[in-house]
Length: 444
Image 1 (spheres, rainbow, N blue to C red):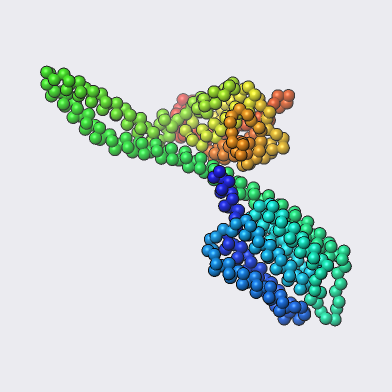
Image 2: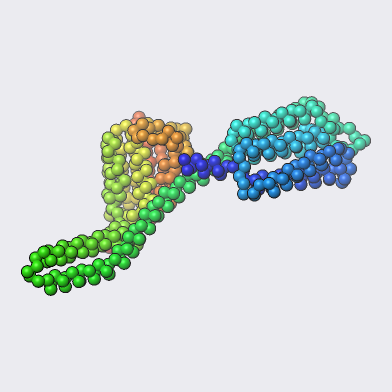
């Protein structure tokens, strides 16, 4: 729901933006009229043209002072203003040659703005209005301003050709602009979702640091309590067994508190060589596979290597990305998922393969794009509005690539069926320096 709201807000036109574009159009119209009438000396109803230009300027001024500049227009409000621009331009062209006027191409501007900013139904409606006005201007218009001793004639076939060019251009450019704008908005929304995932992981890391700080601050008073308890145990009278039992229990609980604080302190270790921050390849795979074992799909794991096994720095982005890919494989598999890990002195590769229907050839080249509808699934209960939109794969691919990996997706070779995702890292991107030094000493 958050992403949908984000997309809707991001496509709404700001009043300030639309007013700025309209001022540019008004200035251009005024300059064209003045230049043609006074500089070129062509006669046409210049006074009536300026009536329509001044009307647009007056509307702009009223909108500017009647609403805040940060106001985002509703879809219908923006469509009405763009429709007015089409009609106003139609009147100007009616007075200056209709479709024989080369400025008739400016009819495309409101349609393009609508395609980028408004829903497709309103864009289609504006396109129909534009075609209707252009149709009228094909047959009804004042003569094109020209030298008085020369007569210009434009056959109906020529005017019809201009009309067809405008209609086709509006359709093609409108569809293209709408497609590009939608993809840009979807990509921005998906990146926002990715940032939310990373922000969540960052908050977890910050909690680790807070826990370590709390452990450090509580260590001193707890040491004092432990010391005083020991002194009281030494001086407690022998004939007060209840007191001695209470002191023994107090000492035991203080020791337990010290153990808990020690564990909290280890969470905030920044040294990547610390035990809590180092994973073996076995542990990494098991952490991402374990949550998926309850769905009735066999998960087969194999590991091979041409050198010592890598010791990996714990990375929440890698854990989340691999976990999402394994979840997808289990989700779409018929009965089995195979995970292969192999490594060399320079690279570490993990492949995830399922025996499901595989990726559709139509979307295989676009895998990793957000909001890409892919394989159907029925194993998990998912919201229909979110199922199969490709956002999970996009986030997983983005996170893994940020960690230095190359992600490749394909289908297994026939006659088998299934999807195959291969993730390859440079080994140096995964191993902390301390782990690499230790492995180098072992090789020697």
